[in-house]
Length: 206
Length: 206
DNA sequence: TGACGATTGATACGCAGTTTCACTTTCCTA
DNA sequence: TAGGAAAGTGAAACTGCGTATCAATCGTCA
Image (cartoon, rainbow over all chains, first blue to last red; front, side, top):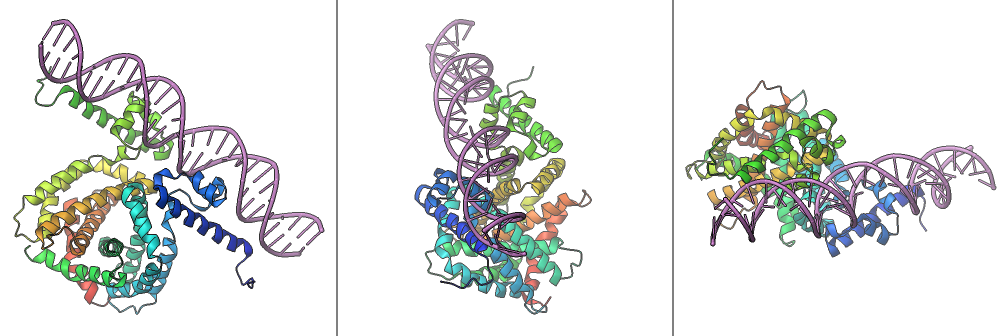
């Protein structure tokens, strides 16, 4: 049916199992709510054992997180490919374009995840934990670009945190409104606040 | 022995029990590491039953969080007391002064918490969850001050997120270095990055 | 094909967090 | 100040997450 390619059967099966768990978990969470679905329930519907579930995902919450790690890799690669004399925030913003496209394609999954996270602080927390990893990566990328030769200092870390906040808010607004505005534009708007609005917020009354 | 005052005996006992749990938990976590301490261990050393522990703290992790909620209340009150025509970031920064003093007094506890959080992502996540609450509060305060009459929009939320990031990084740097620099100064520096450095990061090469 | 390594499933266990109920302590009022 | 209401405590049983172990099965490669 399909040529074997370079990916082994084992590897393909692993991917299948992983996606199967994710798809079915999201289905069940959506049907009954996160906490009324046990890992046994997921395993049963997936027809794969509970033991195996925990080999793929360290916790029940992680099955929700999706491909965040891969996305971060993408983003990092895009960033280091940008011209090093470009303003850092512009580099970042351009690097986010490809990512925004990926996200648009998976929007419905994100919406489901967001709804679940709203009712369950522990899941929100898990998402924030991943964002902390992103933020640290940003800080390293920024430190490389700026003068911080001794790793990320306060400066890089604050900028990274602010950028992460902008992205987070943009994504959240994008998921909150019902698809009327595109993510790329919202990210642009959020970055504008960062560069301009903050400056004004510090200096001007209001 | 002591005049009853306005606080009932019940209320005082509750505070005592709460503090006792927190103190002993921190001791034990420090001795053995968070995950090698069971709630039973804490209850046993505190000579208060496990049941009671869960009446005071919803989870084992929460015993670590301390008085974050009270601090947020303080901060909110300080902010709304500022002149409404002052630049918002300056209002916030001034409101943070009293808070920084409280934190300085509890520094050793924060250091212990930070060390524990570094090894245990779930605790880090719990901390971030609290920060999300702070951030939302900031967003509301900002929305009141700015034009957002219909609740916090993208603008207020991005600014709030950036501010939260600045505070978080400042506190973390403060805890990382061994007490040589004072928190108030680090917060000032972080805010400076927000107002000035970000502006430059957006416009200038580097 | 046969042997080896990786993956899976079954079982048992420790511990977090919930629930229920009986018991004790504090508070309030007659 | 006695006695009942209300709040707080402790014991025990239960659910479900996450871990460890081991035998059985599957994919790989010679």
